[in-house]
Length: 96
Image (cartoon, rainbow, N blue to C red; front, side, top):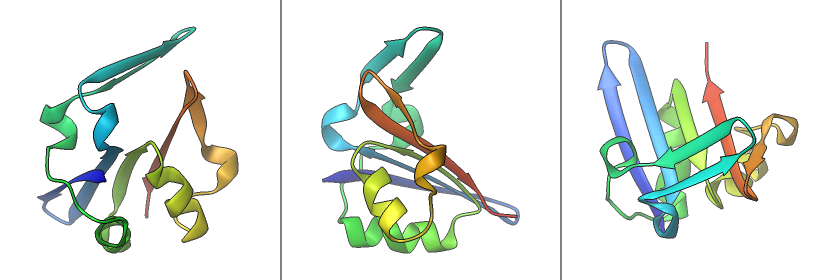
């Protein structure tokens, strides 16, 4: 199950999504470091469909794990913009 956190500030909607099993872990590869903290991603487990609905509202998104593939299939993320750190997919989105 994915973990979803939505934060609203003025006209911006930040969506942070990660796989539950990645929470509280850290990944490093070369100079890249990715820390999956509960303080940023939250702890609320939701369905993939709820995550995709949140991405429809998002102006900014940070995605880690299997949700990246779902976001690609739904047209939110271009596969060319995905990086992998220790094999874990990570993507960011900004809607302007």
